[in-house]
Every structure is written in C-alpha cells, then in structure tokens.
Length: 553
Picture 1 (cartoon, rainbow, N blue to C red):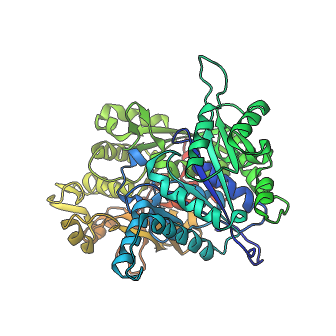
Picture 2 (cartoon, one colour):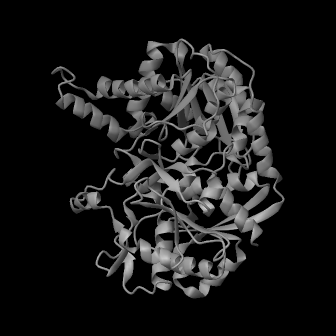
Picture 3 (tube, rainbow, N blue to C red):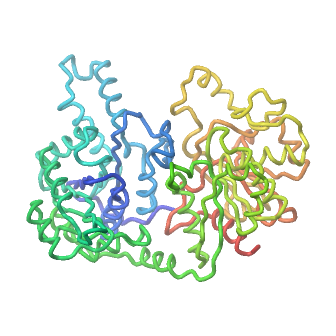
C-alpha cells in the first residue's frame, strides 16, 4: 500500500539533490539518500529517488550477487541495484523503471539515437552528449513522479574514472540553475585504533577531488563509528568550503531505520529546504518513530534460519545478497511484537545429512531465490528434513521449485526427477523452462529474458495463502525462467500437494502449500514477495510465516 499523499499540486520548480560518496565504497550512500528522501517526504513534499550505477551492464540482472548484492526487481520488471529497494521501503511507494540507469543503459541510448539520426547527423561526443542523456533521464523521472524533490544517488566513489560523466551532469545542472541543485557528499572519517583520534584528512582529499570535477558539496554527511564533534565539524567546514552547520554527524547506528531520525537531530531537512527554497512545513515522522520503537521493543524471540547459496564471500558473510528477504522477516516480526534472530546458513553444509539436526534449533526455515546447481543437494535435504519434522518452511522462487521437486521425489517416488535448470535430460522434469525462453537461451541471450515484473495470481478458497492475504487476487513481482511443469500437477495434487495460487489462465503455478493437517506451515511462492515488504506495511505471507514459526516453537 503506497503512502497517502496530499492532493496539492507540486511546486513550480523541481529541486534535485545529488548524493555522492567519498573516501571508500560501502559508505552508506543508499541509506543516506533514502533517509534524505524520507525526511523531506515527512514535510509533505513529493519525493522520488533515483540511482545511477557506473557499470557497463545495461541493468543489474547479469551481475554476480556475491560481488554486487541483491538484484531488486521494480514493478515494471527492470532488474536494478539493491538501493532501489531501500528507496521503495523508506518512501513506502513503488518506483518506476525510469528511476534507474547504468553507464551501459546510457551509452546504449546515445548510440541508438545516433543510429536513428536523432542527433541530425552532427558529431556525437562523450561530452556533452552523454551527460545530457543523463540529465534528460533525471528530468523525465521528475516529470513522471510530479516530484517536488528528486534525490539522485551516484554510484561509486569520488575520484573513480567510472563516475566522472555523472559528475559532469551534476555540474551542468548546477550551472544551469544553482538554486535548484544541492550536492551532498557522504564521506568516511576513520578513527585508527592505534591513534584513537578521528581523522578528517581523507574527507578533505575527497572534497578537493570532487571540486576538481567542477562540483562543490553543499552538505557533508560525516560517517564514522562515533558522532562527529563540533571541533571536527568546524575543521571540515574550513577545509571543504561548507558551513559548519552543513556538516551532519552520521555515526554508526544499530539500525538503518534510525538514520532519518539521526539526520533530524542536526535539522538536515530544514537546512535542505532553506538552501533549495522549499516550503518548510512541519515534519511528521510519527509513524516512522512508532516503527523504530517496535523494532527495539520485541521481547519474545523467534529464530529463523535463512538457507542460501550466496552468503560466502571470501572470509566474510555477504547478507546483502538477500537484503529484501532479511528486512521482510524483520518487518513482520516487529509487527507481531517479536524480536527476530536471523541466522545465515550456507546450503552447501547440508549436503552432509549429519548437519541437518542443527535445524532443530530454529523456529522456522526460509530458502530464498537463486540460480544454478551449487548447493542444491543441501537445499533438498533441508526441505525434506523440515517437511518431515514439521518445522515451518517458506520457500521463495527457487525455494518453491525445490520444494515441489523434493515432494515429487520423496512422496511421489518418481525416479530421475529434476529441474531443467540442473539436469535437462532427466526423465521427469517437474520444473521446466518456459517454451518462449528456450530459443533465447539457445542463443545465449540471457539478459532481461526472464519473467520479470508484476503479475496477478488468483488464490484458492480456504488456503493458507488466501487467509494470509485476505484477498482473492494479488499482484506480485517475478524474476525467473522456470515453472512447475503442468504435466505433473494432477499427480502432485492427488498426493496432497496444494497449488493455492495460479495465473488467471491457471497455466502457471504461483503458490503451493501443504494443508494445516499435514504441516503447521509449509508454503512456497514462485514470485518474490520480499520486494513488496515495507517497514510500515509488512508483507502478509512473511507475517503468516513468522507467526506460525513462533506458535509452533
């Protein structure tokens, strides 16, 4: 459910806030941009958010999740960076495809226009034509959203070759109309353990590097492990040409949802409104504050195991691969007054069945989406174990497909059973490729070929899914190539499997489950419900799963 907005017309001139990052990657530009959008929205302004990624990839669909993190699918079907998910969650609204661009998509558009003679035969140059394409997309997104304010996060770190053209677009927009553009630099201030003092020099260097591109920061968000003191605010202001009150302390916090409230301690939204000439209506973050309070007040615990294949990245655990799933679990737990304890378990460890007994320590088990054969044997072992031991289970996308596969193998007793993704020569392909995709895959044309974006599903009366949703028809976002093979539906249903959600023509199976008589909660979905989960509007299926997990402890 989108947030209610006032019926007022947008202000005459849209304002643009560009968020750039200094010193290092992973400094929190996405959360900062989302939080800025949130605190301005709280002042009854129409806000939309954009992300510019410096990758040559046309979209995020072909990027390795262990390197790039989660691929977030927008309502229109575009595969994007995970920060787009942050924007939707913080603003509590759907964001259109036009709000995301990459270097690849921008260059593709420029080249297409050149081929179509849209430049009327003139010489097409990197500058100004590429930055002008970026600017045209930003303004188009502003127009589509009828936005008072557009926040634009520029990926990468200041000083990298990859984002120079995007900074040039910022310079050109600022030069065209200085009163309508603000630049916010998110920069890291280290506190070396051997020194014990917060150092501002890296931020000074980042600021000067930004200046060399013709862009000057109006605000600096000072990221650090602790709050930034007044002395260092003044030092940053002096050497980076900003006002001391425009240096905003952004210390590490327990939850990203504290960040908007933390920004308001330094009156960031009011200062942005003053700089850009925006109406400064009273801020209302009451609902957000209630959510943040709930996130900290849960006393009873619910232990959830997320069994995935993408957690390991060298010696580190990369939970960002499943960030929307993890956040969706939290929202539903908070709604129920529970404190979620989420464990990240690699599916490969469960290839050894001796490790399965570890699952008895959890109240519920979730298997998220994924691709390929790595860790599949472990996932199938997990699904069989939780089904037989009555541990609540929630399978998403691949997690549903493998649940169907496990049931066909161990309950229907089908021999040589598999999915076409793993073994296309298996005798029983219970999960198979969509016919219209086979030709594309044969040509190795993999980008943007999946079933992407929102599709409706009709729910079966009396099912767990229908009870959770409280609706007859729902619309959810998809990202997959494979489907339940229609040839096996009757066999599965005769053996007690329930397909409780289908496409309108009943050809595609969207939701499957076991009855309450067979299992306290065993449900899988072909889509990605996590993309619709919001802090102020948790997803009903996640809430049903968490509730069943807690009640069946």
